[in-house]
Image (tube, rainbow, N blue to C red):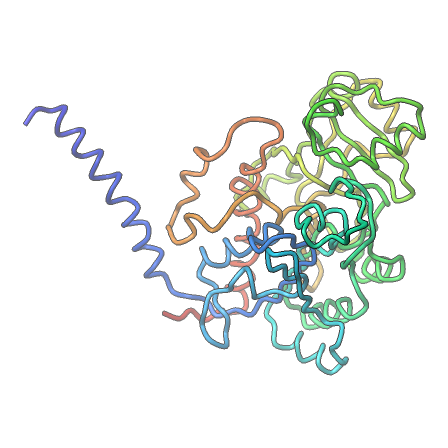
Length: 401
């Protein structure tokens, strides 16, 4: 047999056998009984994009429910909004729980993760399901403001948070939990409980600011900017900052920015090794600007790279160029806060049952500024996996076949 034929046959055998080997390694890993309370109120379709990233990690690491040793189902094992993909929905939350029931719920958990409490609005819902809109509905774009259907942090969800914090169990929360539509009372209570304060600013990178081209820019954002400044001169990419009182600041690429997208940078070298994350990672989605206080520290921070003109815009509006991205409490309770829409990534459950599938992740995304798959594979997945696994090991987690 010719040498070339041997090489081809060997490569084909590897292509066939490697996935099987990878699956076999995953299959024979021990499962990890672990109760996790997940809350997601921003669910438009049953593909549950806003929290499926977490479920990918849970199944890949073989975390199972203590009660029946089954894997967590991303479509059913959470609290929040449950669409049926036909235009209807149901709600399962803490609203009808008594204080005793809330305490029992918290006591049964090993960990809590509030992924996205922003919720749902009428325009977005009717855009996805136009057949359920009332006959007189004046169809608005999904990026336009409309009546709020469901969402925000509630007093009952705060009670569960505090109970789990007092028991020193793992808590992970993320944007959006403090920002609108959460009410001021609950926001301040959350801030005081976890030593973090929202500045009332949120922001996002947009790959296209030219409204004559297809883009994801909210219509209300442009309208508010024109009301404040008179026109909309932007044609490139850039970063939009929005304050809770509708104040808008736009930094345009090249005009105001030296680098078009915010970068997340790790504060200390030891975090690179511990969490397996990159020293520098672009973040092209929604984020918020917070201040943190002891015992919190920033594992990584957002950096906005501006030129002289951009510096002036930020300074006049009291917007910092560097602010926390991943927050960790170094006190006597395990708490992490992700100051962005971290769990919302464009992935499914593909490859979840294959060991070391992350080694092939670089083949799944491009280098474009707006792509978000790299954030999952290079940042969210290793960070969140390490956080949960470390906590599980410290609590003496018992593995089961």
